[in-house]
Length: 158
Image (cartoon, rainbow, N blue to C red; front, side, top):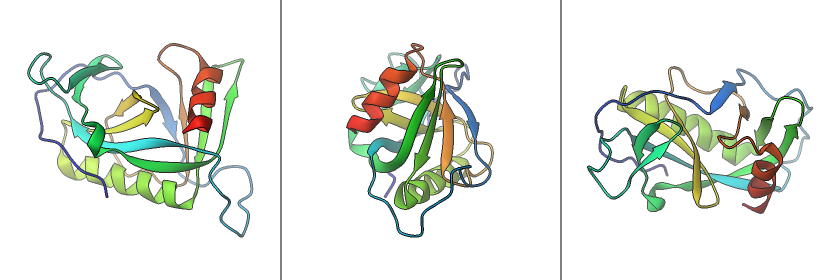
C-alpha cells in the first residue's frame, strides 16, 4: 500500500528522473518471475514550504514531505549505470513495477502538488511530478550527486 501525506505549497520543479519507459525493458523478460537483485522505496507525498514541518526536506530543488513510514519497498530485477552518460537504468521486478504504476496513478489522483518519491537506502533520490501514469517496468534516473555507480550499488544493497 502507498500512503499519502497532506498537500503543501508549490515549489520549484526539478526532476532527477530523466525518463520513463512507456513499454517494457529492451531486455527480454523471463517467463518466471526472477528474485529481486535489489530494491528501493516508493511513496506518494506532497510539496511543502521549507521549515513548515520537520519532515519537509529538499529533494532535487523542491521541498517535499518525507515520512519514512510512507515508503513501500519495490523490488528491482536489474540495474546498471552507463558511465558515459551517468544515467542509471532501473528495471523493476513484476511486483515492484506494479507498485510503481500504482504510485504514479496515486500521484496523479492527488493533484499538482503530489510527488512520487523514490528512496534508496535512507536517501530520497527523486521527487517526481507525474503527468501521466508510468507504464512498463523501467525508469532511468541521473543521480543528484553524479555518482551513477554509487547509486547502482545502493539499489543493489536495498
